[in-house]
Length: 294
Image 1: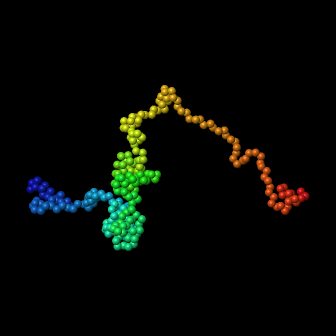
Image 2: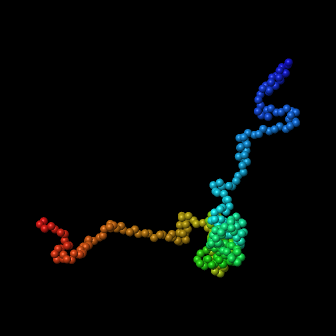
Image 3: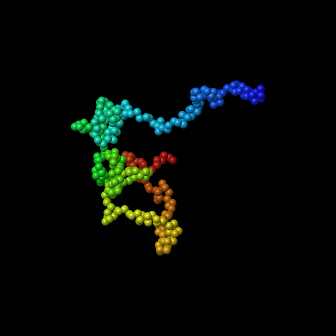
């Protein structure tokens, strides 16, 4: 046997003695590979767990907050759900419709129905059997909104835009339009510029009485002016023959040597009031008692 044949036989014997755990190192025979496709070995558990961790979708669930499980079973909770839904609805509703939308036994639970009717913000029309929410302000258009703002301003105050929005959802848009027309004055939040309070503009801007908005050219000129520093300011005042206004000097008061708690002058002689009038003429009560013989 040649040397090449001996090396081949030794290599084959070594291959038979090895324990291959991977199908990559010990592939199936050529005929079997062509007949049936190779079966993949399941991946390692650690690799699979890491893949699942990477593929986990991100959710916006806040686990520290309780989940909204509906209207609940408590009567007061169901009452809040029913009132809030009617508050968000501009039109009156039937009792059965409110019960269906809010998933509350409003039409079957007598205790809940009595509390719902006795609510100070719920209005019931016995003729139509419809329920509506009583808002603080009652208007549904821009003209009525302006009338309400005028009424509140004449009383000495403005109106919160949030309260107006609860009565009419389109109130903020109408207020912005009235502001552009010069009918109302609006205050906004410093942080994000949201509408806060609205007032009626009693003085309308006209060319005769004034109040018109200053043109942008003059605004730019005004803001372009810079106040000089102290040295240049004094120099410019001196060149114009002006002087700096001096503050009035405060004259210090002379210190007083008077001590607290003591009054000046001679001590005042206190008069003695005699109450034992039956001893008058026998004993001088204004003098200290002296033992006789001393």
